[in-house]
Image 1: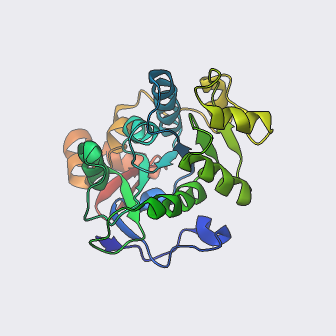
Image 2 (image 1 turned 90 degrees about the vertical axis):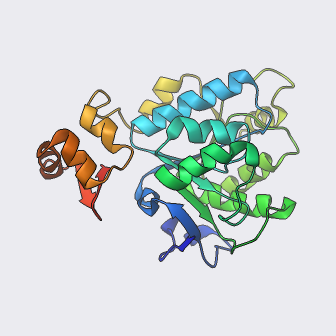
Length: 253
């Protein structure tokens, strides 16, 4: 575990920001525009499909997807957004939890970013999940909840978003399948996403989706690997402002 040497500016509105943050992976992801996507651990297939489409869409316009590495919605969002994703853990980073997400979490450690405010050998607790949620919500420019029961931890995330003045978006759900998000709509505390492509287009456009070099650089390759594959074209992309070469790695801009 490494210690983050700066406090993200997004924490300035938190009443109790983390005293310290530990991380594994690419801390530069914290400087990207970010969206928080959260929801039920027991998400329906419909919810997972919409969650994945949203996460991929935001990844493709240069956003980083923030979530909590739990089963269900969280895991779906992380997988779809790799490598542009940040996982905020409710335990220390030397503990892999939940075990069912072990492969995903290790992929995030290697290719994306995982954060925790807990020192080594700290297991997850019921309380730490609630506390973790404030970091997930704070990091995102806005919050998307794709499914939630009315008395769930996800609804606490909605409450945090309201306290921080962040917009909340939800997706259409059938009656009695996501009472939490339906209640947010009823109380005018959330906005409905009617069309995924139209919604994502509000925040940006897909840049170089078919560009092989840009696709390659989304995984933050080493400079040597990029040069072996594309030669001096990498330096041309740097001069054009499409990528940044930093610490012998290549980052898409």
